[in-house]
Length: 115
Image (cartoon, rainbow, N blue to C red; front, side, top):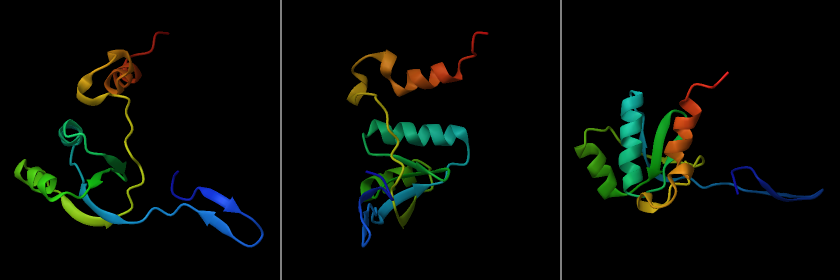
């Protein structure tokens, strides 16, 4: 279910999904290198990652917040709706087929097309 999905509707009422705001770590990477690095580091810890409005967000955890600060990133604690979960089919710890990894899919999309 996603924000705004209608679960029920009749002449008198509409029941729709409303994702509640929650405390989150929010970062605005300054470059593609920083974006890639922070996403890689968060992914290595198997924490849900959200990409919204050119920002990287994750549910707030103080140890992660402190780790990001100590690693030179500039995390902020904000109350936001976490709406756009970054999905991947990479299995935990890299086990499984490389042909189905998100990394492999990105490489295929970036490769020049044969004409």
